[in-house]
Length: 357
Ligand SMILES: Nc1ncnc2c1ncn2[C@@H]1O[C@H](COP(=O)(O)OP(=O)(O)OP(=O)(O)O)[C@@H](O)[C@H]1O
Ligand SMILES: [Mg+2]
Image 1: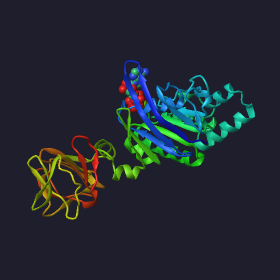
Image 2: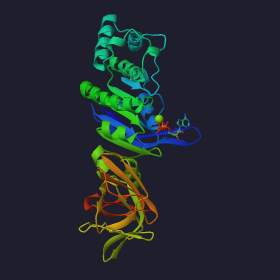
Image 3: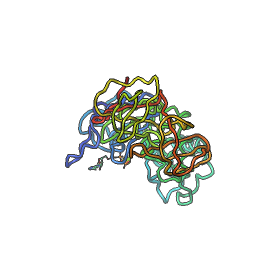
């Protein structure tokens, strides 16, 4: 098992594309860290530099206290699981799992023990003699995991391993990988563009954008205390609402956005900030009230049973409200809304940085 440290790791591809810029990250021994961000933000590039599949332009990567910049992938004590399972089609599940160990010259009895142990952990004991084409997507993904597990590596690296599975299977494999982490207690770095996957699996999450790390934090801190507008908008679904405007004193404290005036809750202390700002609030942090608050027109209603999503607008900015259970409102009604004092975010309009009181 091993700690993984990235120091100012940068990757510049020929042609000047900086895919990762000054990435700093300290993954503790046995930790499960998720890299998340939109397509092209540099997640795979960062992971591949840890794996040794991509050269490092500058900065350093260390695994278990050893700088590995110039060490071959096969000597880094890592195992990688990709989106494409890359199983050998002509080999049985057993041989697919054993192949890497055979290449390394491991004794047959040791290989047999490892393969059967891993198969047991993954619940694929009955499939060992089958060929990959006779397996479902989820089963193939388990074989790919098994091939990594038998190696008993210090670090597991995953690059979107569940992307080819259907929604239900993804949820199932998500919990299986979390369980596997608990069981193996290995260091794991997991790449996904799916923020739900990140939030549910990661002990800590690295949010990336444009090759840069935006925030490294626990799931709950990312949700409650995003450091900037990008993180605030990326984490959480439906996404946080943003109104651009300014804080004004109009009877009480309010936020003016376009022609709308949103009263801010009593007792909320605004950060000192005289520039145009962005007010952020999550759909689940808006309350429907019978009177008072501010009025907004219902444009679309999505009753989901356990909750209702209500789409409205404030000063021409679309706003989503997430109300628990079913609500009594119809399209074109006016609803009255209030914000919660402890769940309001404010960002600088120009830089997007979070402003705190
Ligand atoms: N071999 C390459 N040569 C030049 N540019 C590359 C190369 N590989 C990746 N890039 C660029 O580097 C950036 C980061 O790519 P990367 O594959 O790391 O993104 P990603 O976050 O994994 O995205 P996705 O979610 O789509 O997999 C992108 O702009 C991409 O076009
Ligand atoms: Mg990728």
